[in-house]
Length: 97
Image (cartoon, rainbow, N blue to C red):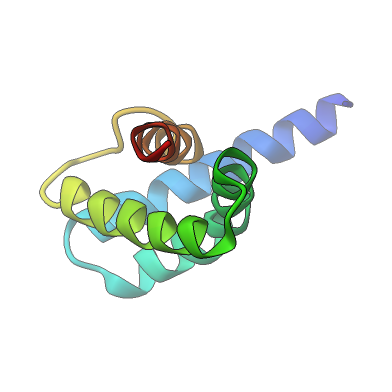
C-alpha cells in the first residue's frame, strides 16, 4: 500500500462518516449511499461467517436497521463507519451461530 492509497482510504472513511452524520439527522439518501458503499463488504463477512446466503441476507437487513436506529441523534458514529458496521455484523453473526 502506498501513501497515496492510504490517503485515499482515509478520505473514503471520512466520506462514509460524513454520510452517517447526515443520516443521524434523518437524511435517508445519505444512509442509502452509506449502505451502497459498505453493504457488499459486510455481506461478504456475514456470508463467510454463516455460510448460508439467506441467513446473511436477513442479518444484513437487521444490521442496517440497527445502525439507522442507533445513529439517530448522534453527532458522529462511535468509531469509523466501516469499522462500526463490521462490529455490529460480527455481533449479529456470532449471536446467530
